[in-house]
Length: 160
Ligand SMILES: Cc1cc2nc3c(=O)[nH]c(=O)nc-3n(C[C@H](O)[C@H](O)[C@H](O)COP(=O)(O)O)c2cc1C
Image (tube, rainbow, N blue to C red; front, side, top):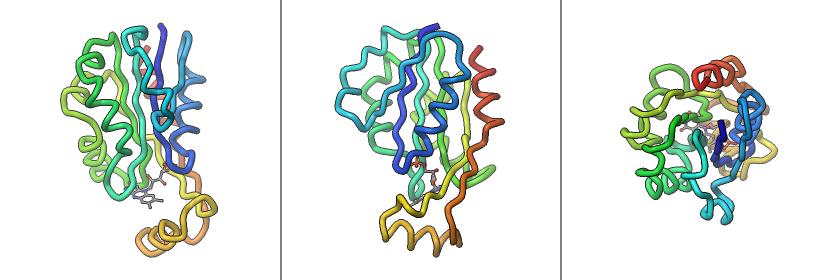
C-alpha cells in the first residue's frame, strides 16, 4: 500500500517518531514535512493510506497540521486508510483530550489508527522562553526522551 506520512515538528521529536513509524510500514512510504512549502503540492489522491502527525505546544497542534487537515478534509475522508498521531508530554485523559482537539472530528472518526507517541524535551534546541517555561511548568531540569516505541508499534499493527 502506498503511504503518505505528513508531519510537523518543532524540535525534531515528531520527525523521529514519523521515521520510526515509516520503518514499520509495508510498501512505499513518502514522508513530508508540512512546514516546508513543497508539501503544498502533494496529491493526496495518489495515496491509499495517509498518516498525519504533529506535536502539542501549549495545548495545540501545529498550525500547519490544522491547515493541512482543513484544506484536504474531503480527500482525507476518501483515502482507504487514515492514521493520526501526536507527540505530547501529557498522559492519559489529558493526552486524549489534546488528541481530540488536534484533528477535525470527522477525521478522528475515520482513523483506523490513533497514536500517542510520547515526547522529548530537548532543552538545547529550545528558545530561552520555551526552556524557562518547561523548567517552570513541567519542572524539567535536563533533556529527556520518552518516545513510546510500543505505541508506534501498535499503531503500525492497527494499520495492517
Ligand atoms: C514550549 C513547550 C510547550 C509544550 N506544551 C505542551 C502541552 O501543552 N501539552 C503537552 O502534552 N506537551 C507539551 N509540550 C511537550 C511537547 O509536545 C514535546 O516536547 C514534543 O516532544 C515536541 O515534539 P516536536 O519536537 O516534534 O515539536 C510542550 C513543549 C514545549 C517545548
